[in-house]
Amino acid sequence: MSIISFLRGGAIALALTAGAAQAADYTLRIGSVQAEGDPVILGFEKFKELVEAGTGGVVEVQVFANGALGNTQDLMDQAQAGANVASFTDAARLAAFTPQMGIIGAPYVFADYAEADKFTSSEVFDGWATQLQQDSGFVTLAFNWYQGPRYLLTKKPINSRADMEGVRIRTPGAPAWVAAGEALGGTVTPLAWAEIYSSLQLGAIDAAEAHPAGIVGMKFYEVVDHLTKTAHIQLITGIVVGDSWWAEVPEEHQVVLREAAIEAGRYMSGLVNDQIEADLKVIADGGVEIHEIDTTEFRAAAAEKMEGLGLTDAYKQVQAVLAK
Image (cartoon, rainbow, N blue to C red; front, side):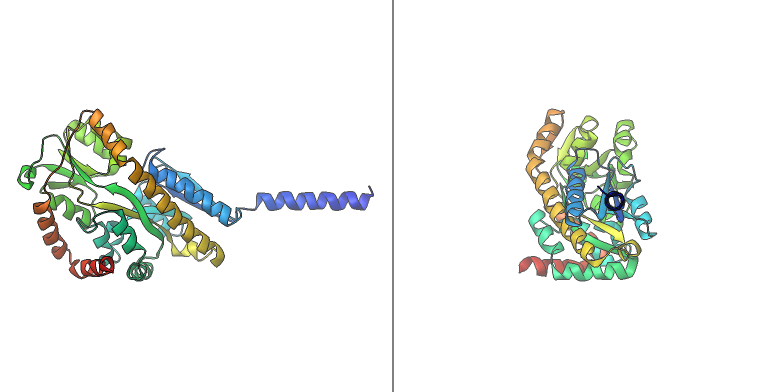
């Protein structure tokens, strides 16, 4: 081998090494308060796989569980400030910027995941997402991530809305969540997700509401005695990033990120639906009594709350989409 060939070979090797080292030109960190093994985190891993394959490794996705990056509001604040962070959030929080988004997290709007997915895949929702970006600087990658039906968790049996009088129930602080807790008849006490277990254990609250995977993941069945199948919210959530970070990503990779988020959302939602009954068995085996209930009076109270939140027109738009 000549010295020139040797040098050329070395230069090529160095170039390849440098190219590999710099392959991830963009990094997106995504996290949630859910524990390892939760369908949400498994969905993030699928998102990572799809993005990195679809961009040839140019976009790297880093996944964080157990609130390692902060809680939902922390991540929203970071994304809005321009950090390379994706926030996994619910529509009730986004309603602070674009009010009609609140209907997605309002009580008794969707009967199941199929309805929620249909609406959040519609042109009407796309228009709302565009408005959200203008109002807040959040870019919506997908909003079809289903965490399951929300059920009422209490220390005493609940047979009617009257049984909830004086019961301190934890909800997130967003108006639609507070309205849901009030529609159930409780006295709402906003708390962080991570504080629910200890607050129930110590008696700071009397009740909470959560989805089956979350109940199992956080072991809430250890500190409550009853689960009532109110199914007051079909918890549909999504992924948003800040538009300043988004603007730095080439358009072809933006397409991959959006498509990956939608596909991973359906993957994660399938996991949730497949394991609801298994989760309920874990909860029952943990000593919790599970109750069916007539939700008519809860639904009537929820309808009044939606009117009070100014969401009547948004609700009509949702119903029009679902009727097609």
